Length: 266
Image (tube, rainbow, N blue to C red; front, side):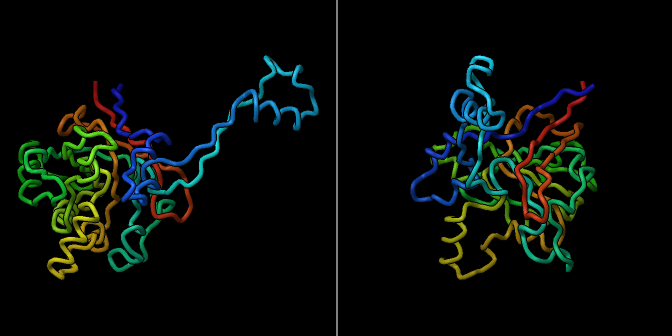
């Protein structure tokens, strides 16, 4: 038997009100818009039209409830990025999509790297911090591991400035993990790379294009799946558990919202 820990952030359309006005594009990755259809309005009308009945023929004059989601991105909430998100090619071959990835690849031994002592708002997590976190875990990264980066973002809530100025991963940090065999890379931050305003500023100040989305672009060199917006990493041990990511079965997409679940031995 296993104890289940849910690592998935909720999709609550009320959270759209907390997106900063100067960052409107973030709305698509925070939550969908949802139309809620109730039993005594839409549901009743649906049943009357479908069955040619009278409302009094229905229990409590009610039909079914239903919801319609719209303006939802495949990168909304806790989600898995397929290699296609990072580029057309991966390891010199056409990048795989979500529908190319088997569930076996998404159910892997998990390892939490607690980098909170080194994580700084808006900055890249140093490779040295990853190395120290691996040593603290007592075992090395193994082929096929799912590495979950705990940056400490659980301290902040959506709407707080710190939530959007999260520590991120660099190309060097990403290559460090994939080079040691990790095939899933997860984070409790809203994004894998540093925040876009931070990367933009670094690029404009230095002219170095290596600051542009370098964490994601590193997947072109060595394939891995990236998972963002994880929660409850503090409820997990450093290692010794399995973790599963169960995306919607979408065809040909670069990502999918997912239910992320850790399975801990009793």
